[in-house]
Length: 173
Image (tube, rainbow, N blue to C red; front, side):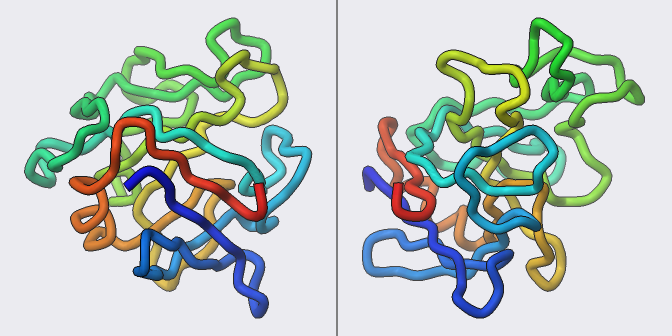
């Protein structure tokens, strides 16, 4: 599979649907819905073509996912830099547990499996948004901070079928 499509629901812009081939799955979107002109902290899911960069998973919580994407086990030191003043903005960084940043080894299960989406990374523009992931949802598909979230069984079904050059098309990008 070379592409996934994501659309917002007409009833609630914070929820939507992920379409993979002929299958349709519910998903959670950012609290601001799908946005054009994404900015850091706006709670929007960017309307864009987002390449699937690599997958991460919690090895102590689940078996190694089957996928053609680059795959890495999450460690306690993994974080994503969302500090616009830092030269490493919108990058995976090594941080001791407890320090600020977007921690990948979370106490909840949202990041038990995540796919890094290629947003604002080629080149990185400070303030345009960071850490746009495809990850697991909260109960009730409550809004994300700007990511796309689907249930675990969707990852189990789709990850083995995705090509290395797969893109997620959000909105009408």
